Each structure stands twice: as structure tokens, then as C-alpha cells.
Length: 471
Image 1: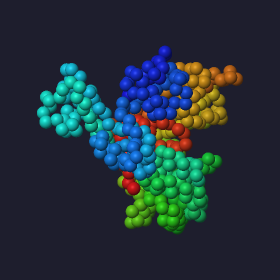
Image 2: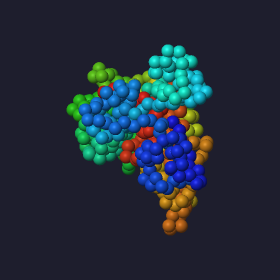
Image 3: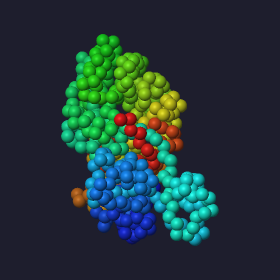
Image 4: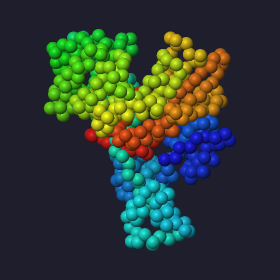
């Protein structure tokens, strides 16, 4: 999974030739808006030199897969095909299979080393009777390296057809999706949202819809609201009755609880509510998950942290989402949004009290642009990674990389003479996060939030992992 950092004087044609892939493949994988312009320091995900296949009349995905020795699901994922029956004659498919032409001096061991697979795997994939029997000019199929199987959740805060389209577009990469969110009311009710199109899209893409409930809003911290519910047995029962009714009516298959700013004294009351939720959800086959503030120790102070009891959530729930983002808060000073060094501190604590296979690591999908110097009360602009790249090109600046946080950033001066600092994510930072998932043996990742395009991320996600589908 090559990741290339653009150097001064580079162009797309030269990079493509270096890696032996067509430039159009690099353009597609990175969704480059201006292929003729690259920013110094920009990273490119370079897809493997897979063969292409033009669909013929009467062909099926299964038949094509059999021809190349791969699975139909692998072809579907490589091409973003949600419905395997929807391929059409003339359509060009990327076939996720590598081939190697044997050169003079090649051995099976040396070829296996080059591609990171076992020699026996190449031998079996090509029906080679003896490892020594390969010859110059022979074409060998290189089997795919085994990939960890993970689960992926994504929050989406846009509803109606807009939210549904986001799930249709990227749902092939998800295990779960959480429309965010039903806000609880002080009477135990839930504020309705327009989620029917989104739920329908989730089922179309074989994604499990999770009902997300929360206590806060953009204007209210929700501490008192959570206190009202959590300290009343009757209101907790009422809230769960309403949540179950919505789940059964609309087809949700799990509950995700995101209670934030809970008063420290309500910590055990929150735990008791989760126990009640588990008791009522599990007999129906529904899952229970929670979103947790990024704690680095059991006694971390602050309204965000104290009521989030990591050991209790790890025991009670089916899985948790660690909200490992927002260090670079929009109202705070410019800094990395989800720095690797800080995420590692959270994971170092979390895995000691929560089983790693219950942990989804948070992953932000947005960039931020701060005005300099930062003034208290001034908020950063939030936008997509693609917009971050567009601005770097517009202002002709070099993209730099902070090795401590494993995060790209740059500074520019706008037309009004104002200085800006932008922090975002790229293929390098995404790969660093995926490496953490592997290192700690986590259940997977959770994205906040859909609607900010980051094509490199999806390509790398599929290159690193097999995403579990439960439907």
C-alpha cells in the first residue's frame, strides 16, 4: 500500500510510471480535482498495479471472480459495488489480484519477500508442484496477504435524503451507522428525527443501523438533563421504553448511548442506566454501545471525563467508541485534531480496563482552519480534507508533517493579508491510525462524521482490513 509524498518538480505521470500504475488510477483513488497540480508535501495513495477487466455481455461478478482466482466480494469492494448484480457490459473493473512475471534470478522465496506473503501461498495459488520449478517469463498470481477483520461504525449528522446518500456512497465500508442523534427529553421521551431514508439506505448497503441517543445539543451541555433522567428510576424506564419502541418501529438493531458532560456525582447512576439498557436490549438481540471521552487514567478530572467509568462500560456494553479526536477544538488554539501521541496515551489506559476487542477507536473526517494569532472566542472553520488540499494549492504553500502527532499541516496568508493555520489528515496520518488498531488489537474504528470527503481514507481502510458485515 504505497503512500507517496510529493516532492518539488514531481508530476502525476512521473509518479505513476515510478509505481507501474496508470495515472488515472491514482487520480481515481485520491479523487484529485486538478491532476495537473500537486502541492509539495501532499500525499498520494498509490493503488497496487491490479489488472483491469472489461465486463462482457452475460458475465457475472462470480464468473469474473472465478476467472481471476479472487472472490466476488473482493471485486465488489475494490470497485465500490454495493449490488453485485448491477454490473453492465462495457464497465471496467479493477481486479484485486497481483501478478508477477518471473525474471532471471528470481526464486519463489525472493518473490514472496517482495510481496510480503509466504512462498507456500504463491506455490498453492499457482499449483506449483515444486518450489524450484519456476521459469523466466512465467506469470505468477500473488495471493492477497491476510488482513485483520475489524468492525467500522460511522456517525452521520445529516438526515433525510442527504444522509441516506452519504450511507449509499460509503456504506460498503461500514459495519454500523449511527444517525446522530435522538436527543432525550426531561420526560423520558425522544426528540424525533427524519431518519427513515437513512435507515433504508443502511439496509441496502448491509449496514447495521444503531439508534444514537444523547443529552446535549449545540447550545446546551445537557448535564442537568442527564441528571434528571439518570436519578429517576421511572424516567430511566420511560426512556428505555421509548428507545425500544423507536428501534422496533424503524428497524434499528442496536443502541448507542452518547451522554456527555454528565455530572461526576451521577457516575454510578449512569452505570446503572446502562445495566438497565443491557437487560432490556439483549433479549431482543440488540447491541448496546457507548461513546466515551478520551481518558488517560481512572482519576482524570473534568466534566467530560469523571462520569465515564471505563471499567464499567467495558463490562456492561457490547462495545465502546473512544472519542479520540477534538484536541484541536474549533474554539481553541490551532493544533492537531487527533494526534497519534495523545491517542496512544488514551489507548494505553483503555486496554487495561476494557477488552481491546470491545474498543472502536475514534477517527475524525474533517479538517480545520484557524486564523492567526488565535483570539479567545474565535472559532476555526471546519471542512473536508479535499478542501484542505484545494487551499494548499490555491495559496501555493508546502504541506508539512508533524512527526510527533503524525499530522499534516500548513500555513498561508489569504487575500486580506490574514495568516491561517490548517491541520488535517492525509494518507500518512490515516495509516498511522490504522497501525494503532493493529498494534492494540482493537475491534475497529469509528468515524465522526460522514459528509466530509476523504477518499484516501477509504482506499487505505480496505487495503489494511477486511470490514465485517453483519447483515
